Image (cartoon, rainbow, N blue to C red; front, side, top):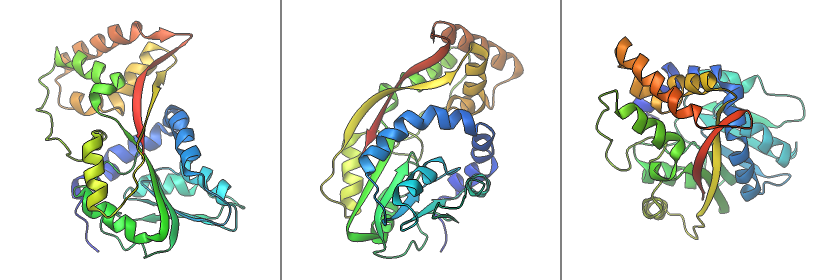
Amino acid sequence: MGTSNEEQVRFWNEDGGPKWVEYQKRLDRLIAPMGDLLLQAVGAEAGQHVLEIGCGTGFNTVELAKRVTRTGLVVGVDVSRVMLDAARTREAPGLNMRFLEADAQTADLGEGIYDLVVSRFGVMFFDDPPAAFANIRRALKPDGRLVFLCWQSTSRNPWVREPTLCLDEYLTLPEPPPPGSPGPFSLGNVGRLERVLDAAGFSDFEITGHRGSVFFGEDVEAAVEFLADIAPTSRLLADASLAERAQALNALRALLSGKVQDGKIEMPAATWIV
């Protein structure tokens, strides 16, 4: 089937995906505490069949496969071939999992075959969220469950809001995208979340807020590198001149210098588990 997410497919294959693979170990550490909360909410059991949307490099897929054991199955789906290539290096005896390159919005994911659909920050990038979630719902058994982790709004996430405001002093930033546009914070509004899920045919929503932190690095330069190369702020720096970039990076250094505690740099973060 065709895809309606051409821009996202291109980004996660040409820019975002390779960068994610490059920073894989750091990103696994960054997301792990939030991912642990998701796994607790999922409660995957031996013998279950699980579909993971936006599996990326497979860290969470492995954890799910351990829980369903060899009697179950985990299928990880992603649009990024380069990230799936990295994910497949995690395959090991005793883990019953496989990976599929596909767009979950339009791909034939099967009908009524999964006990669980799970996603760790993988469902915020659809061009047509109601259509995407309806397609995902078709893959679930009648008594199946969807459980996912997504970001709350940027206003509740200082880890991205403060660096962005910092850059605004030195760069001409683009206009914010319309509310709900594909991106990390597209499902941050609870009302919109509920409308999307309702339109897709889901019911009995339970949306729980969690506070945590994002780990940027163990020193200022590592944190600046992270913000410049892979965090959402990296896109804001992409079109800057050399002089603008130098000023912006110095501003980030000043911001992050005040965030060092116990030999590491972390900033507050807020997520939803749905």
